[in-house]
Amino acid sequence: MKIHQLYGVDAVSDALGLIIIVDILRAASTAAYAFARGTEKIIPVSTLKEAFILKKKHPNYILVGENNGEAFIGTDFGNSPSALENVNLIGKTVVLRTTQGTQGLTKASKKQDVLFGSFLTTKAMLRYIKVKGIEEISLVALGGANSEDGAFTDYFEKKLKSEPVSLEKVREKMRKNIYAGRFFKNIPYFPERDFWLCFESDDKFDFILKLDQINQVLVREDVPVK
Image 1 (tube, rainbow, N blue to C red):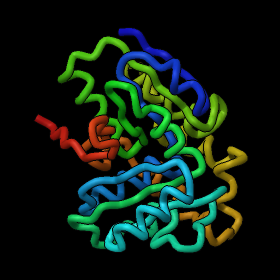
Image 2: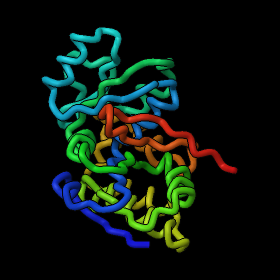
Image 3: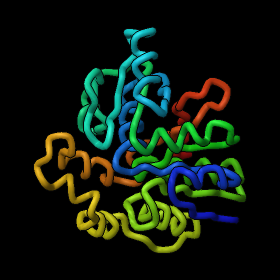
Image 4: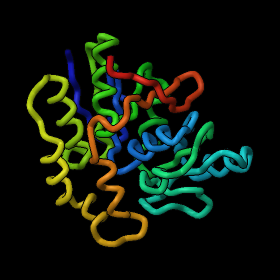
């Protein structure tokens, strides 16, 4: 199996094979929680303008997102797993706009096979790769090599190679990371609970988040344990 680790939004253009776009804190994790709460589909957009246009045209859509980490005026919820973990989203369409995560997704719009990856769906993604017999994978850490996204791509590659790796150790290391540190400073739009939810488990959900290239939306695809 060929495994490529790439870094930053622009690197999406160079990705080959199955592409896993990674944004641990917090877009991919928030999206996973949205689907777990019943969301039918997620429309990722690049700009605030696109988000507001969709919300105006479809008032029943749920607008989720942030700008530089902070929920912008007009959102129903910020880009926050803890904001969604107890919300009923059954049958809802979510419009998601984030500073980093949705930028990577929209840049991947012309790619063939794209997943939105987080720790929460790790084992489901591994099962998907095995079932599909995928031989080439690009792991795109949007935050860079030294970020929590880079920590995930290292972790996932080790999982692919059946090498020993500890989520607990990764989690403790990331607590000291500059970006992740903001979740421990009592900043309202960086709640500490978000950090713990994003790193809670690598087997939290038995589904993957897949980009439907025809309709340009994220959908849930169940990959149950057999």
